[in-house]
Length: 249
Image (tube, rainbow, N blue to C red; front, side, top):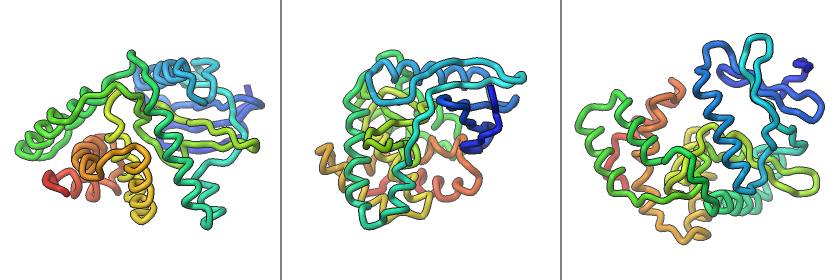
């Protein structure tokens, strides 16, 4: 297996291309349990019938854990949006349609989003009053069992030359409330200084999903707080500003 064609570099991992395969190699500091959980999530989502790269193997390469999937030829929606700004609305419509397709699926063995959020809120260094308010808000939210991506962004959707879409990176997948997933996507746009695109995205999502904007707003502090646990240092101040606004409307 050749590891000389680098597709992308991420914190604690490098993704290579070898023929028809994509090989994600993790460094020695990355927890084995997280790697195996990612592979398990991928396999479970694959069983729903969604268009995702086929999981081929979980192995070790030169002493490092690696997840091997099919390589999908194409461009990400992020690339297409940047190359064709005049088609932004068209791409956002497709982006939301694919997200709703994801949320239409069920995978009973995925971790529950409520449990994950509960644990992450408890793990933050927010003050006790804020943690209590966030736990109370989370407890009031409806418990669903929809497949949630957990990091649904345009860079995680590939469009092949024939127009077929594939969804990448299922490491954060859970089953739960789709509004939480939409809130996470909206915050990601804001973190990338693309709040205007985030607003367009959320307006389209609310219309297509028949979901009130206020309902997604209620998820924003919860999702922001959860992201501070493993979030990037440069994102922390922004996320904390959202996590502390428990009465955001």
